[in-house]
Image (tube, rainbow, N blue to C red; front, side, top):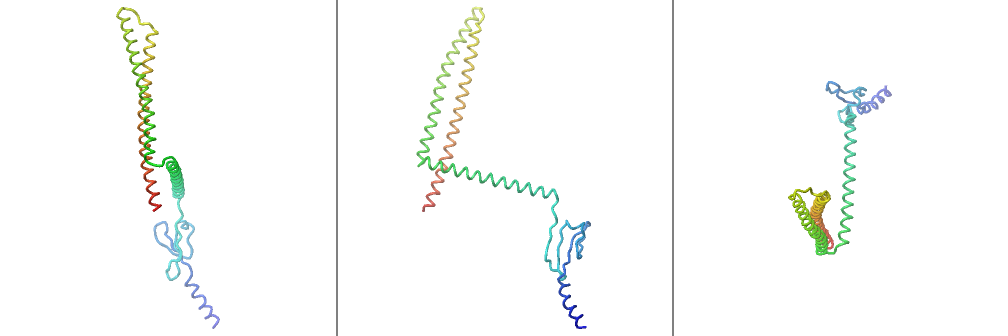
Amino acid sequence: MRAGLLAALVLQPLVALAGIKCWTNNEGVRECGNAVPPEFAQGGHEEKRANGIVVRKQERSKTPEEVAAERDRRTAEAKAKAASEAAAAKQAAADRVLLDTFSSEDDLMLARDGQLTNVESLIKVTESHVKKLDRQLDQMISQAADIEKRGRKVPENLTNNIENVRGQIDEQKLFIEAKRLEQKTIGAKFDADIARFRELRSKRTATAN
């Protein structure tokens, strides 16, 4: 009798601690029991004590689509992080070159003006050449017109020369346009470099203080 009573007292707390699992069936109804039926095992469940306290919560298994989306998200995040780190490293390298190459904003401005002047010199030389070609073209066109006025056929070599000179003029004008664009690019680059140089020097001064 005492042995039976002792066994009952020992088993009572064990029963109280026994796990009760609760899940949702296919109809959305909440069910509970000692074990989750296999067909609902992937849907997630809660494990409770007999007193109703939740001791563990098992989330539902992700669908293949959700797994693929999660994988894609992590891949995209990894790529974005790698790109950000690469950009930061590239910027740091550019900053070192900028600070090692120039000691002041005036140095940057002198370098900018020097490059712009060199390009401008090329433009001036090319424009002068275009003017010569224009005069040459005018002369050949006038010559061809005089020949036609006399009722004669314009020689083929003269016609070819006229077309050749026109082609040269077009090429030289395209070259000038490209150099004008290059000047704008140089100006924009140095504007950015000067602003960045000023920022870096300001940070360095603040750190030193």
